[in-house]
Amino acid sequence: MVGLKKFLSNKNTVTIICVILGIAVLYFGYEKRINDQIQPKIVPYAKARIEPGSLITKDMVGTIEVPPAMLQGDPYTDTNAVVGKYAQADSIIPEGSLFYSRSVVEKDELPDGGILGDYPDGYVLYSLDVDITSTYGNAILPGNYIDIYLKATNSTNNKIMVGKLFKNIKVLAVKDSSGNSVFKKQEGTSTPSQLIFALPYEYWILLTKASYLRSYSTDITPVPTDAGSSDDVDEVSIANEELKNWINSVTVWTENTGTE
Image 1 (cartoon, rainbow, N blue to C red):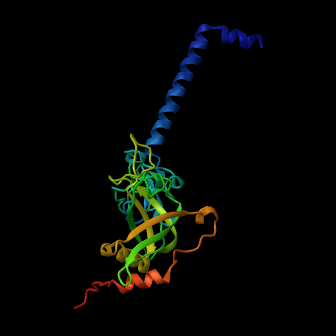
Image 2 (tube, rainbow, N blue to C red):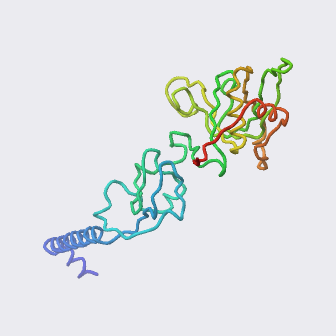
Image 3 (tube, rainbow, N blue to C red):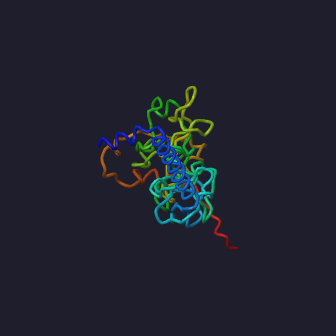
């Protein structure tokens, strides 16, 4: 022990040890930096073209080894950080491309509020004109359920008809007159102008017909319900066959089938 203390007390010895340690630190640090630059990293990539606004699912994502020097522009390096997010609304993610932070966003960051793909196959989006009054003081929120009521004048007897036309419709988005989401954080007050929801194609046709019956003084009104308060919500359905039959009796739907 005395010998060790004497050895360490020698200034030349301490200097030599410090120099050796310094060289070792520089060597191993440099070697690590070199290895970091040449050692391939496993990163996620798009196995197929991903359209703007599309949900990125697990089957769309593969992994590939890439030299670190190619990882420019802030790409994602973790597959779990990509799956479940969405392609930016103004960006196509090409097949074979890496995923970059500028082109991958959360659902609520999409400018359309994430309504793309948020409704069943066979449904069609419908935009209903509304205002602050018809939305009960801006109380209808995305995710709420509404019923649709119709008021019209029957030309046969000149009586006013009022009744529930559809029930159990899920609101996908509430937009202002500029097309922005009413409930996103922004400067100033945003007034509702459109309710966006989806209907089965047959019902979409029926509601579209009703919206054009201006000569019958038609008025389409959304009414909030508590349908979404439980996990078990019935599908969208017709609530009044009499109104349905009347709309079809005073309208006709023509569809271009592409044939002559």
